[in-house]
Length: 104
Image (cartoon, rainbow, N blue to C red; front, side):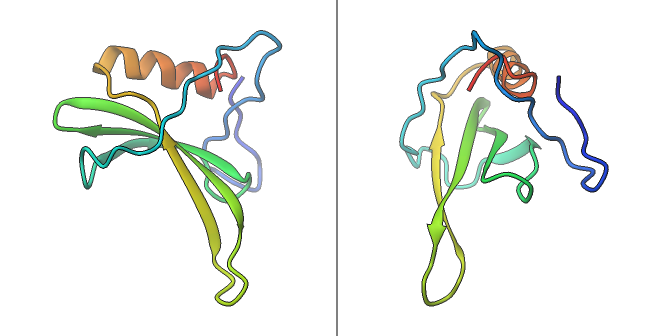
């Protein structure tokens, strides 16, 4: 189950269950320049985090992963992938699956 760590008040997705749904992650399409984030998991405690976003009446879930560290600036290098755009009800169902470890 999703849990809150005592040191960090942000939402942390549960570890995947043994038989979880494997999500097809796509390269970002750039379909919408600035989607609005509706929900987000912790960006600091794990090298992977998720955002539930809405843009133009459609919903998308984005996965961000730390892919390394920039050698000169020291900034994290982030890879972003997203699901297909979908209806609100489908997006919330998939978001719930991610948070409770039923999908990755």
